[in-house]
Length: 294
Ligand SMILES: [Zn+2]
Image (tube, rainbow, N blue to C red; front, side):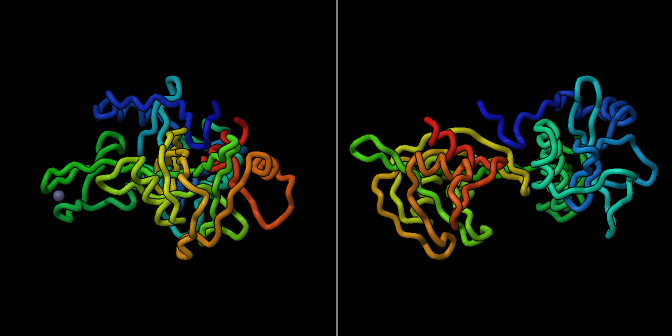
């Protein structure tokens, strides 16, 4: 089973203990801290750069990540216009870090990024506009005025590869080029699940909207946390009821059917033309690869 980037987090989040302020304070004293600056993790020697607490970090948003064995780990969000100097190492963009860090560090840094992002954008109560307070090591915010509780959000996104099966059993998948993609990238289709919608219904709706394709059976494949800023990608296959499609011209600029042999060749980067498939950290890469190899 492939471990997708940002999944496989090894930490014990100690969710049953982190609401105890005395326990949390004891962890903070013994803790190591992963600094973030402008949503970028601190990277040191190609690892997540956990450091002992430093003077000057008081007042920064600080969240509990979990226990690595017995070692408590935290993340701290450093402010400032210019990059804080922490000796060797530096702050690297999260996506780029995922190509450099070991899988476990990518997952831990992704957890930290999603949480810190949420705190940065949810400092005030949506109910009464009072500034809210961090609780439970960062897994809850409490409004001191109206007592409303607010929890970090995870937004479900469906990402799906339509498959068409010919009468002879041969299969093709449909990949599309989103207008927002850097030029030659073709990928699976994706969209947010809306309120009052099942995962399967979101898959069918998005395919109708983006490529006017009718889909039948939807099969769940795997999921991936995707901290940009707080998505959970739900990877699916969708049975295409016909080969006919029509791009919307708005979100999708082009779409093409690929056979398994061509998909394998493109994933191996042996075809040099104007079409590229997604990189390995994206679940779309694995949706295409896992289908093409079966
Ligand atoms: Zn309130």
